[in-house]
Length: 167
Image 1 (cartoon, rainbow, N blue to C red):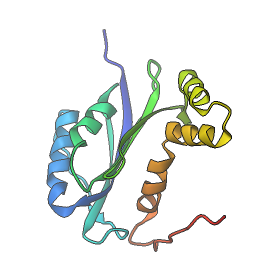
Image 2 (image 1 turned 120 degrees about the vertical axis):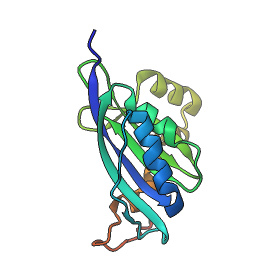
Image 3 (image 1 turned 180 degrees about the horizontal axis):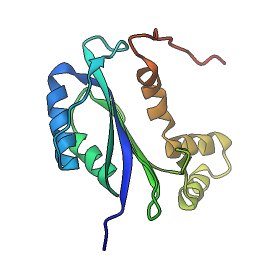
């Protein structure tokens, strides 16, 4: 039986300079081949580096890459795995303070919250709209998105703009 293939992206949003070669080794080991990232400075966090790497491999490779990079301090990253004919897509987000968040994704890259997770949120909320909102924010990975957003858009050509929620 042929192995179903997929593809995805590793986005290392911030990594200490000394960790960069170790991350290449870890991702390469998960992919079964040597990789080289094009590292650039991360302007949001002086002294940190960032890189993106497009990969292809068997279904489950995104989880293997995430596992290979998990556990290092001061590392912010995302790994995506595109959906295929036989599997859903996935997204993993990691920050030093929050750890890893995993979510199923659809063909457009939107997070999909399953029926059981919604029922669980409703049960916990017990008719309190604020609790329901909190539980759905957890299911969506909003805290991870909030922390990673400035790192996603920062580049040498784009100044960092910090937005603060008002109200």
